[in-house]
Length: 144
Length: 185
Image (cartoon, rainbow over all chains, first blue to last red; front, side):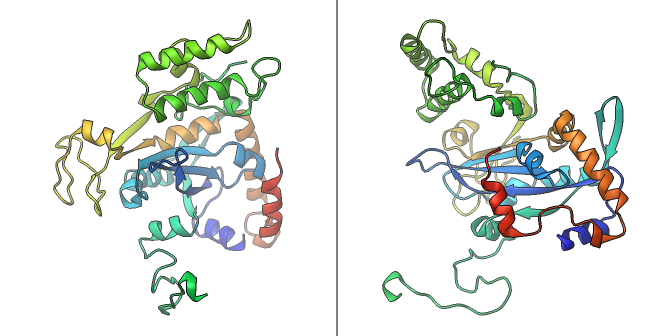
């Protein structure tokens, strides 16, 4: 939390500006189906937990029989997000118009999606640790 | 009962997700859930429009007096609020180990130079949808529940700005956060 607040401080988020968290993960579309869907969600960090969960925004849906290629998926979104951080979004509440710049300082993902997003080897592969250079050791099911 | 057809970038509204009244006395699901399940079956089994019409008629025959499902694909889509124009469709390269973005004008992958057709990419499901982020956030912010809460929280943040140690207002404990996410609200 402290790190998050520091990020907001560095990004100079004040006034009506706020931040969003991006989230994505693979979902099997149907039981026994090869096809999977990767939804891409946004949630507004500054909202209360319940409101944040109730109003998660769907911004993208990837369809395919393999894992999403996130380079391709996210490419058209990056200019949109850059634009939101530079050009304020106008919105209204009770006849007042507010202007907000929106930044996207974080992305929440599980290990599988994280590796794909970072463009590194999958978390269970050789030399896949993102913190150190240890190659790791393989343990087959029979060797445990 | 069925107020879900409000135009939105995503086509779904929070009202839709919250409305869980049973369809009729003794029903296991709501009308909204039934509509979505019919639509899911339509996509999953690739029914023709005629096929879906027959399934809807069949479902209607099993319903008690007074309860009726939608009669056609058009009415079904209208009820769900599927606005295909709200999202932009992007195609990607079907070649293994490539999956680069396809140029819509030439239908060619700029990375591996594979040429495809829209029909083929539709069939092999090599595409993704993106909604306009600015419009989606704006629509969410214009819901009074969201804007009221956001303004309240921004007020608190701005008042305590500059003193980071006093602004720990959210949950910072992972275990407590997990407990909260298990509560059905």
